[in-house]
Image 1 (tube, rainbow, N blue to C red):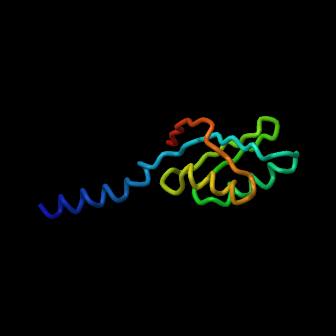
Image 2: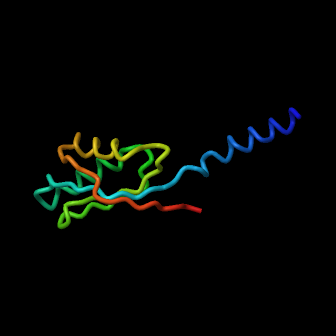
Image 3: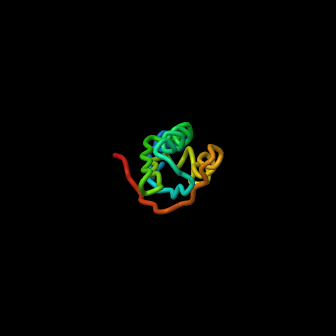
Length: 99
């Protein structure tokens, strides 16, 4: 009985990272006024724990961010851009599963 319980607990502990989902969101970043602004926005988002990819587009005034939802959240992403001087809001989301 104890072995079965320990095995189950160990299995659950080691499979936890597999339950985390990689997500992609697009943020509207209205404060970008010149072609160098995306450099600052990308750097700010890249410093957030769990962020694996950032694509900032000046023409569209948005940023697409791929991140581990176990390590960060949309709120933390928008706070990062706001703290860098570029307030942002959620534009769109899409779940992205990694195998």
